[in-house]
Length: 121
Image 1 (spheres, rainbow, N blue to C red):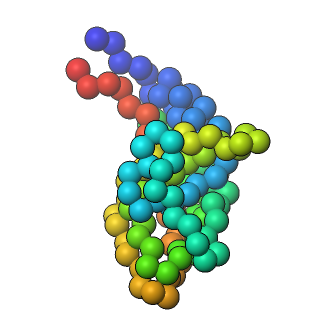
Image 2: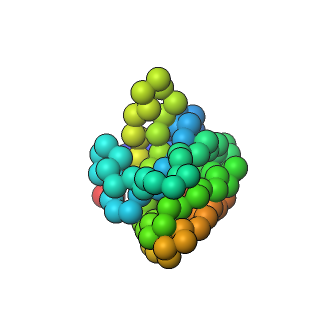
């Protein structure tokens, strides 16, 4: 089996990241359609941008911050395109954080990345 070069992986990661406009918070696996998105309070999807890919990884560069609704749980991030009716593109599992009845804020760190890798042999 052949592997893609690092340049090819970067092109793919940049293409995916370039199609993404917003990020969302999810209480459980969003599947292929963006299920389990948080709602309520002043929660809203946030704009997201990425640095150019290196090593097949495109890192978030603007650290979006969310208002998490009361009793919310954040376990996944969801990434959406910027079309007229946004389309879900990919979910990324994160360390689960559960909030109190007061809610709180959640920030997507610049260590968060979209990764494109060669398939396992």
